[in-house]
Length: 247
Ligand code: PEP
Image 1 (cartoon, rainbow, N blue to C red):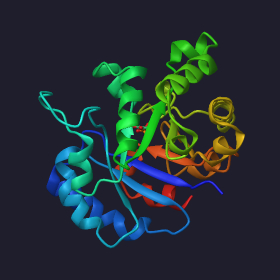
Image 2 (image 1 turned 90 degrees about the vertical axis):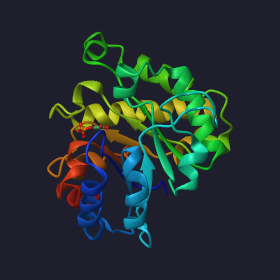
Image 3 (image 1 turned 135 degrees about the vertical axis):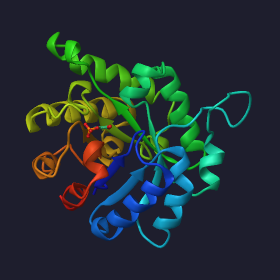
Image 4 (image 1 turned 180 degrees about the vertical axis):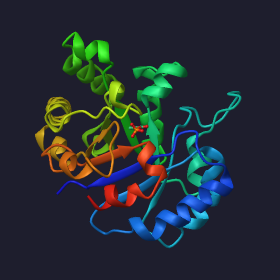
């Protein structure tokens, strides 16, 4: 049985005080044993939100990490730093990081490897642009992102990765992929995972859909065979996240 996961990506929202208030508000609402709920929050919010989440089964996640342990990388945060403050999970290769911060499949791969080395759960993002979808190269693009992002991983390590399919044209736009579009790509992801790591391993890897997931569409999306939950941006900052977590 694959793990059902609902991860909120708070992006660059919420000061530490606001983050504590949001986490306190959501904590009792999203407590569920049926799925793994994760709050991925800005770096400065991690320590105060960790306090709020103590004693719950909600996991704390970061939105990025550096692929070196330490060194002259001004402004960056490393896996051991995250580990020490109780972070359990990290978003890697979000399309906003790829677009605005020059992330490539190669840096994504290094970050996935580093997260695994420190026992952090990587949520590795992939997704096509609108132009790529219109050119009919969605599956091709996704296959390359998965192959490069998970390059060199053993089967055991691959099982510890969560993949998030996030069509770029659906992120923050209110334009959600249809359940069929989302399922088609999530299935294609499982196929490539099977080619890389074997069918048994592919069946154990959780694949999330992200892109304008809302209280209104979550249940339909999460019913699809290859969709094991969601990576949620905007709707994770409000009460709607309760409905999504319960879906
Ligand atoms: C995201 O940031 O990963 C995301 C999917 O955002 P939204 O839900 O707002 O589209």
